[in-house]
Amino acid sequence: MPEPISTLVIGIGMVAGSSLVNPRGYQNSVSSDGQRIENTAREIASRSQESVSLSHSERTHLTTELREVIGEYLEDAATDPDLALTPKLAFTRAREFFKALPKDLPDPELAIDPDDGAISLEWYGGYRKVASVSINGSQRLAFAMIDGANIMNGAYGFSEDKIPETVLSAIREIIS
Image 1 (cartoon, rainbow, N blue to C red):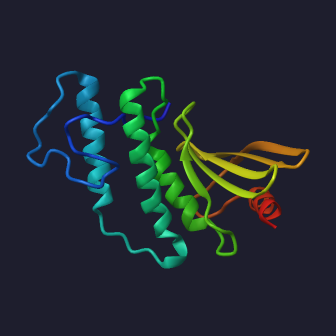
Image 2: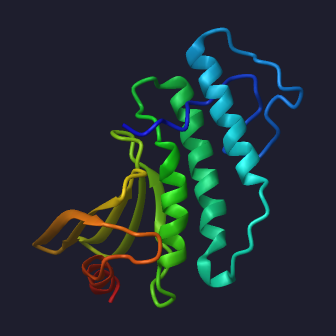
């Protein structure tokens, strides 16, 4: 099972890597779970400060939006222990998906699935027309599409540079 990103750690001033996490490096938590969450938050914060050279076509704005969505979700998770934790690798896999997303497709709407913590990408094409990709950090994508009375779903392998053609065709069908 992938290791979770964390729930919001109260008092460390971290929201999805957007601010410094306890700059002196002191542990604020006593429990081992709290310390693990703080360490994970520090790792996410440090990765968000890394210099990465990406072209505009790789949709870097979606990575920024995803950080915001994760931050909001972590705030909710701080008050609702029943929310599933997001796997650490899901963020990386979502960025790979953004890079591989063809230019002719519009940006998806981003969310975190409260049942399994996966990152959800959705495209809407009108009444009862939606395509959804779920990324949980594994080497597969969960996909579902509703087009009126037609429903399609499945799990597809995903490499960092190739989105399965079945998924791309379904998304194009929904938004057309």
